[in-house]
Image (cartoon, rainbow, N blue to C red; front, side):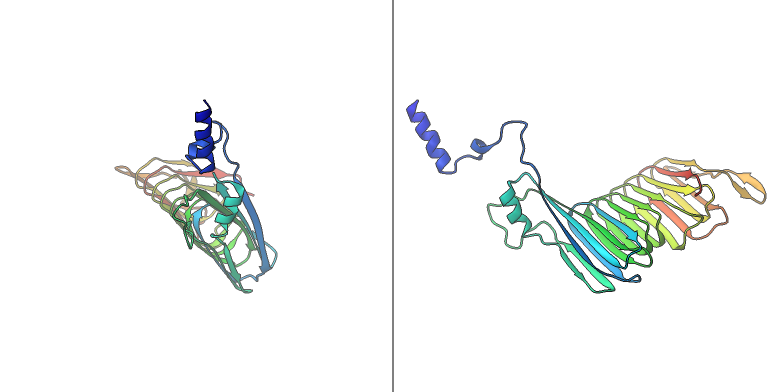
Length: 282
């Protein structure tokens, strides 16, 4: 018995098998979280570029102030606090700006000088940005995470390798692409104010909500999936005509002039369900 205790003590002092340090079943290391913020003067008509190279979500909200606020949240799962702090120091979020141009860069999860003994845990970076509502342009690249854009008028180009997109109350120009994720577009007002809206997913559902009295050139398409329409009939040459999808093998599409027509609104999924819903006009 004494001999066994001596061997166990020697193993612990020598930094022996990791299993000796594992927490009891059901107990896990609490996530380590760091939150920071940047704020700077930024005038309408400017351009913001954001690249998120690690997993995490991005939310962008338009407001009336001539300023940008960037709220950043870094999370490390499965690592003690001190080690998590040291690890996050190797993944700085770089924010550079002038009064008309800004870049936000969160690099990929590969340390500059990786330790051969380092096993990288799960790292997540979430970013919320408030930008001038009128005429702020965006260029966004997200490798793994969801994107939400609210109350913004500008030129937006968004590319997601894996993640869903949700847009509400936006205008101007929007072009969005995700390789795997759902797309939800919630339109406000009487018509699209700007050049148009296009969003495509390679694999995922698409949903567009339009006010009952909305005007646009609508195109909704799925190359492999169901298409459903819950929207009022439209007047064509004085007659009430329902919006009807066209079926071609597994593909279904809806191309229609809604209201008095207008800018193009196009949502496409290569594989997934497509749906149009109505909501009360405001």
